[in-house]
Image (cartoon, rainbow, N blue to C red):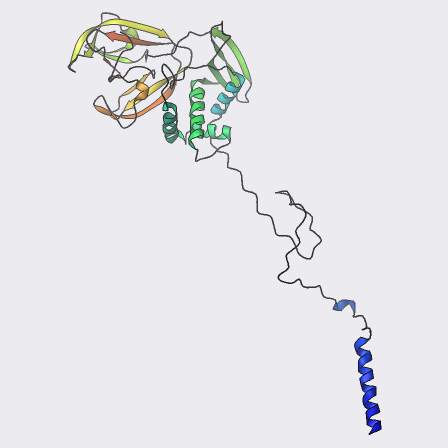
Length: 341
């Protein structure tokens, strides 16, 4: 019995030595990388990588989360006519560029410019000019009201610059303001396709803004339609009397007004095909100005199809005053008033 107790004690001693003893090192091939706990957060780098560049891998147990891709810039419009970009170069070259703003001459209208801007952009936003304006300002649709107004203001200035295709570029004509005691100046020159500007002449430009009709406008007379530039005092034309009946009357006055170089005119188109190009401040038959007519409203037995600005290089504009009670007459078949009294 004592012998059995001794054997049992020896066995327990051997087991205790194995528990507290140093285990032999395992072979290198048996080492496994520690697996991070699923709840552990990955270690992020101390600084964020610059978008579009690669960053060195951090020495951590896990890779950092990828940064979100930078947002793409708004695309630059394509398909713009290079001639409009050259007009912008001319505006930059001549900071005192001058023109008659049809929205402010002869009287500014409260809110009228924004209304015209919204209307013009709606009709013109896919034209080569509009694409050039978008490209110049690095913008894309949709534009807000302020952006549409800027685009429209650019449109009015760009349109006034006369460009005629020439070898390797364009001939241009524009007006600039001079010193206070000096007359404004009309500049004639050439701008190459690469943007090089060469002047040929400078000359004083007449003052005032156009309020009349282009010389080729046809006036209704008993002898047929005659260009307004050929009408003389005493000639017979058709007019309206106070009861709205068409009558034949003599011409009391005729006026020719020089224009300030290139300028903007209003193009009024009616749904029945009649079209008139005239100065925006020219009176309509109902007492308003032609520039204040709007598409969709009735005018002179038809409906206004469109009202917009077009460039003109006419040296002068003309108007006449028929004798009678209303002073109204037909220009290109459209009833208008007179600037004369």
